[in-house]
Image (cartoon, rainbow over all chains, first blue to last red; front, side, top):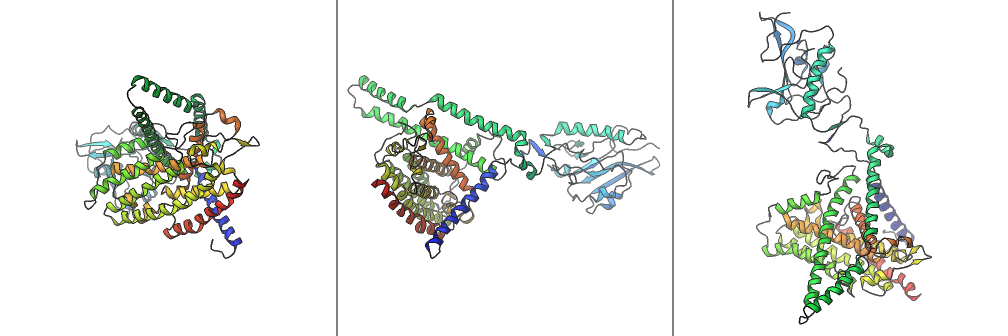
Length: 174
Length: 443
């Protein structure tokens, strides 16, 4: 609006007002669009298929080969084979644990797993938050659900972690 | 396969069958059961990208339902207005009969105590208009800002789209500790919120909410409203001074400079309206806008060529500046001054400042609809079946929406540009507008 002549002055006013109206129209248009966020605790979004969420483990298919333990860069997986009464290891897992406090969700364990379908794999569960450090260490033994258990020091019991979202089946286990 | 040893007691592992999927399914059922018992909420499995969602919004069921709910609200409010009808005359009738009853019941008493009681009732009603308006506008602002940013906003409190959110916030503010700096000027620090709030209460006295619905039919209503709203500046400066805080002081001083400056174009932009109406009374300003040109165009001052539009735009801009709202919110600029003059206020004292801001938004909207949109006049002749207060509140709420809309669209002015804009643009044009109104008066 600092033009020297009258035409420039009026043109400046016109520009200012038209720009203002344009900005207002943008916000008005977005006002009537559906919101992209969801009402989180009531409704939850499903991440995309290649999202790397909390790890699941299937003790039935695991052969106890230790490849995932070796592949893990942050050293958060621990594994114990079943043994015969003579102390000889067999291709079956008796204890398996993942420390989610250390896990960096890199998918190397899943890639290393030789079984088909995979014995350890990423779910789409992004709600792996914990109330205590004990909860971070997930443990599995034969017959446990895929989401695993944690050791509760209060009553010396293994419990199933709570507050998980039911998306462990998607995508299909690779 | 030998006997397996397990460290913890658990059901004996089933013998491994040939088909690997069946034990998997057995475990899966356990997992699913765990998830079912321990989860909350539903999973939106077929969620699309926003761009996909926005391409055909009407395909979405929830969008159509939302549109239907909005339509139903508008239809319901219209039906409510139609059913209630005009009640200004009823109140006047009640008032006359009340005075007659008081005179006959207490013949020795003068008439002013009865009149004072009546005025007290009107004051309480006006106070509640401000309070309820604050409750509504805060919630509305949060919802509108949320939806302009593609969010949802408050959604839980009250059940339907968080409509009780402001009430919950109010209760929280009432229960909060009143933290204040120890260096403050105790008396002024406590006085400032009251000094800010009381003028807004006074300002609503002459506003005509519809036919015969003004709390006080003042002859100098326009002057009175501007004079009373000017007192609030004093409260803001006091709040800045008494807080013993440099940010508060800066906010108070900026506020004083801004509000005093913008008073001028605001008042001068109203001068043509007052000249056309021939009166300072708000009721007479409304009465001057009755009727229609050619039976369709209402004789509102905004439809007077050139002069009406210039007045309207200047008054709108100056009103946004007067209410300290974005883009003119330099007195409480968050990024520069923490919160400006109310940095050191908390609890209910802060709530009073907040309430006053929304009260002034409502007042400015009410003045906009009174001066330029014909107050309670219907936009088309056949629409006057709906009562005047319905149209007045509708127009006022439209302008209140504009205030919220500006806030969530524009960035803040710089201090010097704010002053440039006022003194070098708005004020000269409002003077020029006085020139433009002369032909109308001559005709």
